[in-house]
Amino acid sequence: MFPIGKSKLSLREIANYWARDEHQPASQNELLQDLEAAWWLGQIRGDTARLDFLKRMFKAMHDRDDAGVVFFVKEAGEPPPKMEQLSDGSIQLYYRPSISLPSKDISTWDESNCEDAFQSLAQTSAAESYPEMTYTLYWIELTFEEFTKWLVVRGYPKPKFWRPLPATDQPKTAKRRRGSLERAQRAIAALFPEPVPDQVLLPNKVLCGRVHKWLEKSGLPKISDETILRAAGRRRK
Image 1 (tube, rainbow, N blue to C red):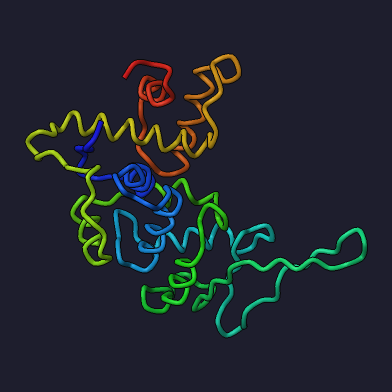
Image 2 (cartoon, rainbow, N blue to C red):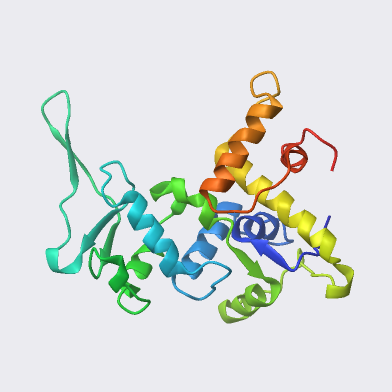
C-alpha cells in the first residue's frame, strides 16, 4: 500500500496516511487540524479557493442560531454570546467562534478584506464548529509538490507515505476511474459518517440514489452505480 503513488491527495487522506509515518508523534486529528489551519492561512491552497469556501459557509450558516460559528460585520461589532435559560432559572452562555466580515454583501469580499475571517477560522476546528462543511473541506486536494514545500517551511521531515508515480505510469483511463471512485467515496463519507448500513437496511438502489443526489447538489460529475457500490464495499474493486 505504501508509499502512495497518486499525484494528489485530499487533506483527509494526507492526515490519515501521515499519522502512520514512523516516529510521527501527532494523531490523525491533530495533523488534519494543522492542515486546516495552514489552508485558511493561505500557506497551502489546494484545488479550492478559501474565499469561495468562506462565501459558501456564510450563505449556509449566517442566519442560523444553531451554527457553530457566528458571523458579524466589523462596523456592527461582535455579537453577544448565545443565551439559554435553564430549568432552575439560571442563564447558560454559549460562546461561539466569531468571524469578522467586511460586509454582508459577499460581492464586495476579496482576499485582503477577509483576512481577519481567515485568521479566525484558522483557530477553529471544522469537525467541532462547522461539521456540515467538512465533506468539502476535508476533500480539498494537494499536490505532492505543494505539500512537501509546506513541510520544508514548517521544518517537518519529508514524508515516507507518499511517492507519486511518474506521469507515464498513470494512464488517463486509470486516472478517470480513480477520480470517479474518489467522488463516490467522498459522497459516502459525507452521507454516512459511520459505516455504511448493510443491504438489508439500505438497499443498493437507495444507496445509489442518495449518492447521485449528493453529487448533483455538490455540483460534481455523475458516476455509475457500479462505482458507487465499489466505493461502498459492495462490489470487488
